Image (cartoon, rainbow, N blue to C red; front, side, top):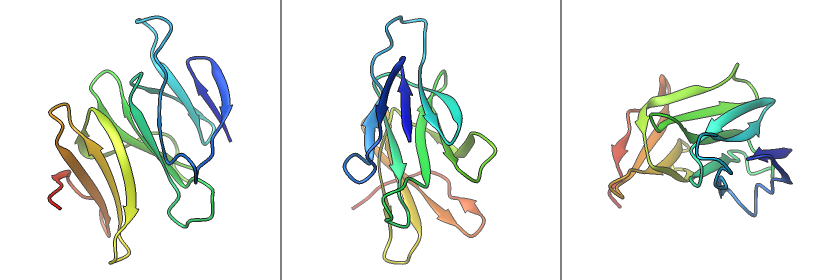
Amino acid sequence: MALLAAGIMGAISVPAAPAQAAPQSPSSELPCRIEAFGHNVPVVCGRKWVNADWDHDGVRDEVFFVSPPNSYVYRISGSSNGLVRVSNGAAYTMDTYEIRPTGKHRIYAVTAGSTRIYSQLESGGWSAWEKYVP
């Protein structure tokens, strides 16, 4: 799968780099973009996005990212028809993902105030974002 960010092409290695940072845009007026599942989507330049490989087969299943101008958290997958907002999420940058011991999928992000937050996939969809407490 290819990555298109600020006009630079490169290969994505899911196992080696589950979280990647978008390079700075060459012009402050231009958003950075990534290519995911046939969609070219805007991301906040210099922020991380997460390639979630839920079944650990070395192929990304979903991409989670922060999109301008409101820093909302979105996801996109091969089975979605485009961008889907993850609950009520807004963040500074994405962090990581995990499968909980319960088998539930969880995605982590960091707010502008450096608070780590998460949303978890429940039977009815992604949960509201909550502060992560270890």
